[in-house]
Length: 409
Picture 1 (cartoon, rainbow, N blue to C red):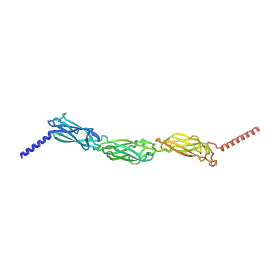
Picture 2: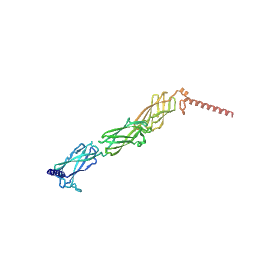
Picture 3: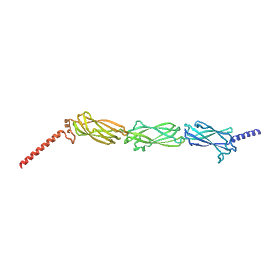
Picture 4: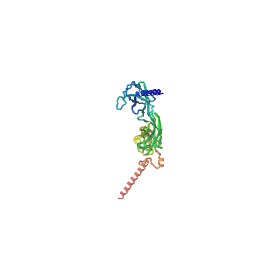
């Protein structure tokens, strides 16, 4: 019995001395970068020291690939470290050995701590070591990849659905995404939401996933026709709970077509023949009409003598102008054919044709209306004859009265 116990103790002591005879201490000295982002390379420094009183012999280290970490191309998997000096683990010792490895981090590597594996062999004894590598996207990004209205433009005073599409540009999940529309910093506060908040919450966006939010966007009635910049703030977290904020800018195009009114303001003559006609043009719409040109096109029923083409220039909202043209009218049913050319707020050319009827009456109808052939300030033929008769009568009456007065004297 005593012999068995002595034999067992001898074997146990021998086993312990065999394990401890290696005396190798293996630690991860550092990783660079720390943390490393998926899809990138990381440099690993493994530090080996010897706690024994004798140098190690035939010491080797080898890296083992796994699902997330692969040996970089051109790197040696196994390294011959030779012997590690005795007591190199002592404080202040510089006899330790560093094994340097370059590893590739797969794009689908989870955020957080992930394990790498090494084998160290010394004099035929092999031990495995695991180290944690911190993986984290240094600046995980959510991008605004598109923003669009139902139509190309939104009209002042109206609403439209506005779709914003965001994409997680990383291979990792991002969570607690809060999207805020900074409507107060839109020029003239020209945009607002039809109802609800200006903030939108997305629980999570998976790696390389796209998500949309749809807003009922309103352009205020006094919005000018032009593009408006819409600032947007995106707040989100990664899987480790790190918070990020990103600012992006979208653009919304507001457009209202200029709506010009053109009327016959007055006319010098109400019969056929040569007369001066005054037109009025106005812009009651909320947007400017730029470079307005007016052209009166001659027809068989009339001929433009003067003022056939007139350049008006810009007509802002609520602006109006009057313009005059001399026209010879030969038909009582004449209507002016007018061509308008102008540019809208986006410099798109607009051409319109208008028809303006003239007020041409017969002498009988003028008599019924109680007006002469010409407007106030003008003289009809009948009026001129009457004035001549009155003038001649007054002349002879005055002459006769003067003759009688001279005869009495």
